[in-house]
Length: 433
Image (cartoon, rainbow, N blue to C red; front, side, top):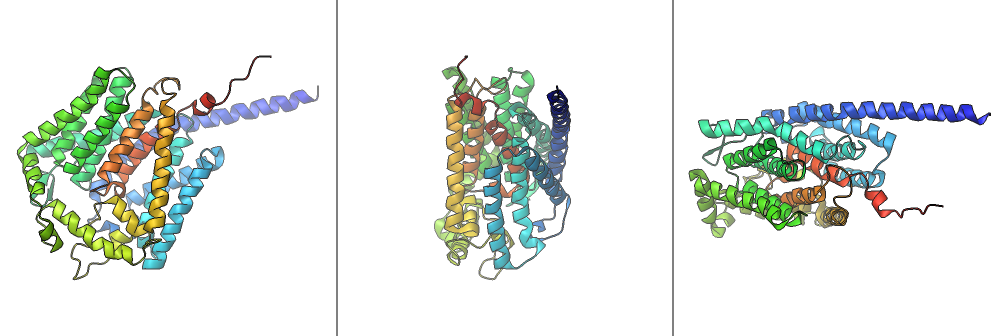
């Protein structure tokens, strides 16, 4: 009889814990939605030289909130502790190298804190115990991308937006049209997944059209190629019939044709195709590709100063301008080269190895796709499509330097990665006695 009180106490404690977790999960999605919505609306309000400032602005406050919430959830639920610690140590080591290279300052810490906030959002989603599942993550991306997409179309119609290389291009609420295009590519792909695998709602089809049109309005060639890569990857990995697989590919082809049919789109493609390697080598930048080629050339000597471990996170974006390199204040426009300069061969190899493990994990998940519960069909294919888009976009853009893009990608990828039932599908089923 003496055992009964302790059993009742344990049951009561379990129920209280479950109620607390359920209440936290109910508040978590609105909190993430509100913070991400504010962050996207605030993206274009930062000063052009904000990367060279150590002041704490609204974006920094949101990043700190994500970090604090992630620490609390991780200590309480302890899901993904090992990979989180490894990633955190990786970021701390190369932030410390940046401090050694550029000196201790809040400006030097800026990039490290920003990337930790992306890791923090991933930890929050992974420890949410299904509160932020794949459909919810996709809805959040739709929600926070709707207003910027509408604004981008308005900018296209009124010939407003951001002046980039003598061209007026829509940017929505984002800091740059290329950043907007990358976000719209993720939103369009997530909306297509919702349409094909979560009920074929007409609203999702309309949102695919909206985000694709907003991407075209940015006239971003990088964004166009990114969306095409995402949709083709999603179509190729989709488990549906061949006709269903063709739908993403057909949408990608239609978007490309519309882009080429617009005057500015065709003009941009013609301008980039006339790039002269000799002119870029002399620093005579007449197109965005010229600028990229020249920027990449000037970054290589920076890498040679510390080829093994690099110069630290953020050092490529805070280097002071010199007479020999008038483009120093422009961003690298290549994430592979940026991480090579900032983290050296060692850091880049660790990063690529981790990415390879993540991709292999998704391919293993595809083998049990469709048996993981409601709303999960082809979720691994969606995760792989977003990763493929990031890999393509990183070849010629600052993909991971834009926080809203990183947050959106982390939402989708980690929600797909933390699908319930992965562990139980691998475990043997015990025989009845």
